[in-house]
Amino acid sequence: MKPTLTTVCAATLAAILVLAPPAFAKDFKTETLTLSADTIAGGLDHPWGLAFLPDGAFLVTERAGTMRIVKQGRLSKPVANVPKVVARGEGGLLDVALASDFAKSGIIFFAYTEPRQKGAATVMARARLVRDEDGAALENVKVLVSVKKPTTKTVHFGSRILVAPDGTLFVTIGDQGERDRAQDFQDDAGSVLRVNADGTIPKDNPFADGKKGLPEIWSKGHRNQQGAAWDPVTKSLLTIEHGAMGGDELNQPQAGRNYGWPVITYGKDYSGAKIGVGTHAKGYEQPLRYWDPSIAPSGLVVYEGSMFPEWKGDLLLGALKYEMLVRLDRDEKGAIKSEERILKGEFGRIRDVRVAPDGSVYLLTDEDDGKIIRLTRASGT
Image 1 (cartoon, one colour):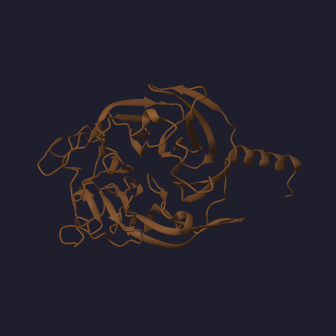
Image 2 (image 1 turned 30 degrees about the horizontal axis):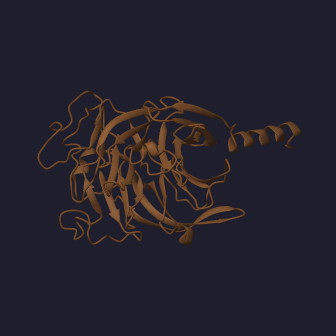
Image 3 (image 1 turned 180 degrees about the horizontal axis):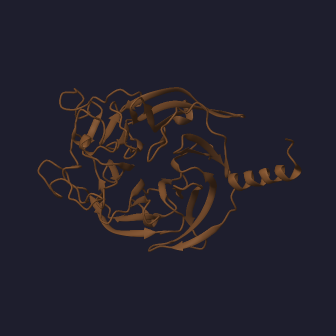
């Protein structure tokens, strides 16, 4: 059937609305400053991870399995050659990060749930991102980290990727919905993993010889970590993870340590039943902070930008529950002094938080019509 002028116009209008949603700016007062929030782009299908490209564009993952480039508010067509994912429950295409030398190499790292004969499992891969006038594609895709045992569950896949200052990669892996796996040191589930950029094992990993644990394991006893950041104040890794009913945690994972799940936790089972032995036990580490009731934390950054000097060194994290941005105010040594809850209920479930080169803060909303929100300092403040 030949398209009519009406259908063509309707399609064009729909494309405009998806690719360049109406711009707006709204101010929000916080304890220390006034923020201005702008919608940069919309029409994303449950966006999960965001990376800033050198030319000012953004690379964004959508949980359903597509990766797009966003430039000047417009969404590209899907990046070609992204591996097939299992987009079920909490699974799908997850985080994305650029290699330290991306401007030269074009290398990116991305995490996803890989289909298996008996279920799915979290993997992390690297590839070269190639762009031209017709779009973008991945080349030379190579899996660097792979959870060997699949699960038929649809929850707790993680997964954030952090490129550390020394060039190694930290990758957070959820317990794959099977809690006891988080205490098995011969299983990547429920762990923070650390590998080199080519997938090899750093010589100073705690189990590098493979005798007491898998060589790639950095720490164990984690439930479902969806935030990770490098802290320049303490010069260490920070992660946040979902608890059960309560018990969300902020941790500082250290080499070879066990963070307790499911032996110790500040949460309860959704049935109300007790999990494990309580909140403390010998041989298990305590979190830096926990939340009860749960806030369902996601993306995490340490703010080091110039736009909000009042927040220097503070932690910013997204929360799916209560749909908010959380700021943890810290002293000069990194100790947490207080918590502030910002934008509560304004934009939806906050999945990721990133700091741009200019110091502005970007948020991803985990919605059917997911958006990129930019936070800047309100004019006159």
